[in-house]
Length: 324
Ligand SMILES: Cc1ncc(COP(=O)(O)O)c(C=O)c1O
Image (cartoon, rainbow, N blue to C red; front, side):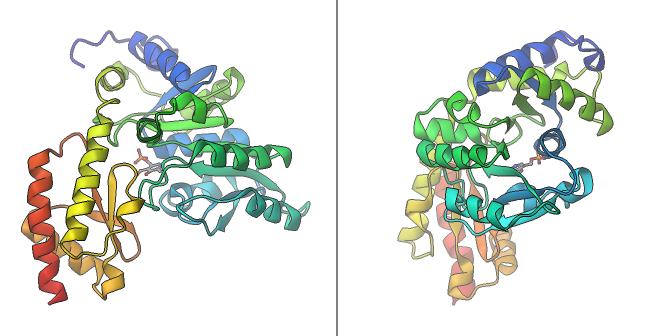
């Protein structure tokens, strides 16, 4: 990062950002790509590029764009959100058809947003064929498709399927570098030349056009070279964590662990999730929330095998106190 060649990103003159965008477009199976500070901004810009105000946004009900982006779809793009129940974060072609059947000229369906991996389902991976089928249905119905691939590279490493195979299916796809890839910040939005040209204008509008952004892009290029294949280690550690927590008697669905998240369904044993998080933090382990009542234990670049061993000792101890 300290050696990065820099220029004015707003003027498209930062060579490190330009190189990152070139590589990311190729990685994701699209003509062009745009560097953005956050994945949220990438998602919101995609909605603006692909929709018109008053259209419906169809997505699984706990999709990040619906639950964690401060109402952005309504605020920034004027969309009506249409949350659908899903299994493992996935919705079906028939569910998409049903929405379109009940839509009318005053609230036309406009876009489907799918998430790979699906965060709130526990980092679950869309199988390629299911993703293809959902996207094909959307296209037949004339809908745009955005893929929130904040953790697309986790899906790619877990499935052995190139990121471009998933990415090229959608009109736009986003990946985030501040998750398991180990960067302090940074995201990419990829799509056609035309759509990315529109996205550039919105990047200015949203205040996301930067100056010497190559400092960050250098970290992102480093991550592409060094931190992608190693995601398999995070996944293996998550699996070991899940097996160990389940063996200690905690409510963990081991089969749902496909990438780097482990869910502990404390709600199912009558334990309040906020209390559980606080007790576990007291023991020295920080965990998050996957969805209501379910804790999220995440593995990433900074979590070692020793850390997993410690967590396996400390989390059951913390929860044991609550369960009695
Ligand atoms: C699936 C998904 N999309 C988008 C985001 C937004 O990322 P950022 O915090 O970089 O805006 C997240 C963050 O957790 C996410 O999990």
